[in-house]
Amino acid sequence: MVDTRPHSRTVTTGAARAPARAMLRAVGFQDEDFDKPQIGIAAAGNDLTPCNVTLNDLAANVAGGVRSAGAMPMPPNSSSKCNTSGDRSFRA
Image 1 (tube, rainbow, N blue to C red):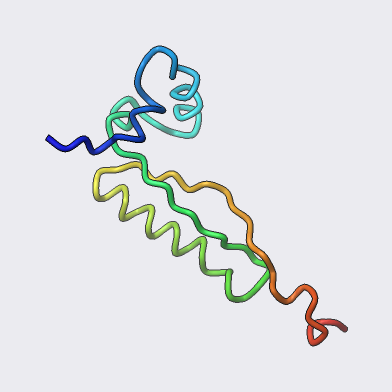
Image 2 (cartoon, rainbow, N blue to C red):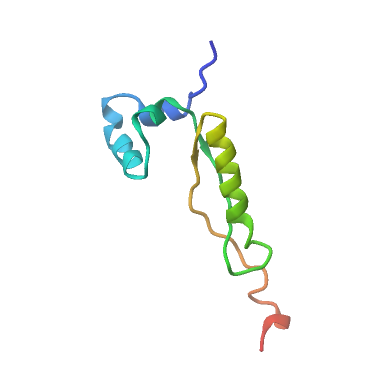
């Protein structure tokens, strides 16, 4: 049998991981969620640049697909670089 949670298990299984489970419960995990694989979804969406403004919506759709597949989406916070910050054409 294939272990579908080889990495998630290290965070959610055992007495030593009780603090991690408490944190996950605080963000909405239910008892049954601890038996599901956790899938990280990285997206650098923000309202700063037009090219990044839709990325959070895309990540939300991916998270919905992950949930539909029986796993738990884990979207970490991330930052993005605005490549226009030093461009003279964007100055007043």
